[in-house]
Length: 202
Image 1 (cartoon, helix red, strand yellow):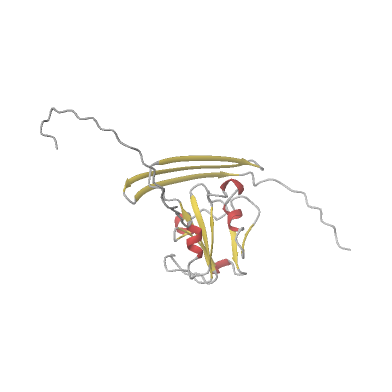
Image 2: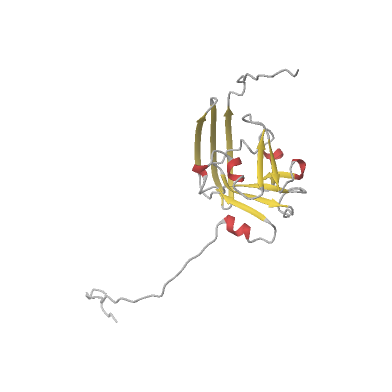
């Protein structure tokens, strides 16, 4: 109790060590949470394999029962096969929206992977949060949702004079509201010639 505001008091604190119990913090990745769903699903996180795969096709083909077959030319559409079913029986989505609505001119072979968080592949039964229905299953591409402002650019060069450039900009408008813009440029010399020798039948 201090009666005089001008009084000066000196204090000295003694240090004491207290041993606390061990605290363990565990968490599951998005892919692990999806695998625990009652619906048959395969999921792959792109964060850990981005530097080891050249495109989205290689990432999806790491999953069992999934096969992506392209025509060979860069930019051509690819056919996704899930447990033997393909064509119109298998659909591709981005964040639950059909790919032909979000990127009408794109295929699963030329979607940039820099802005993708994970890929979920449903075999057979499709959940209600996916836009439409498909008999054989679907591939749902989940994009990154970042709660901060960001501008990211990437560029790649490969054989046959292949150029791939991507620019992504995200702006945090408010809590849980983000405006994103993405532009991509793909080019390859697909007009190369080949000599084929045909033997005449006699």
